[in-house]
Image (cartoon, rainbow, N blue to C red; front, side):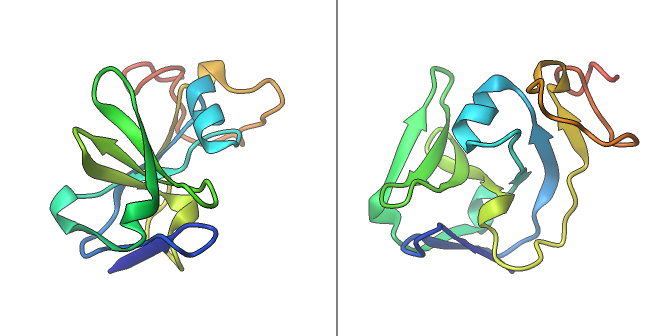
Length: 133
């Protein structure tokens, strides 16, 4: 079981299954959404995800295709990704303890920040997974 929480601790969740398909996206949108050089994100089965506390203080941003992010309205932590109002993944920075997963690929490194240095030997894609470097 995996648990997670926001920075202030008011929003908590658990995932009864395993995290999978961990990625780091380096596009300009993810840099803004995650206030970082990239996102660190893993997929979950929506049926295995449960809010334990604070669901009532979540704020959502949803784009045109139904994909979005949910944030704690008190501290601003980005907690998860949603599609059609269902959680499909969690941000690894909000996971408690060892998530028992490694980031398997870095995507959209073609638009990474000029100041970011990605170590050699990391599986990278210029854009999505069909465009290997």
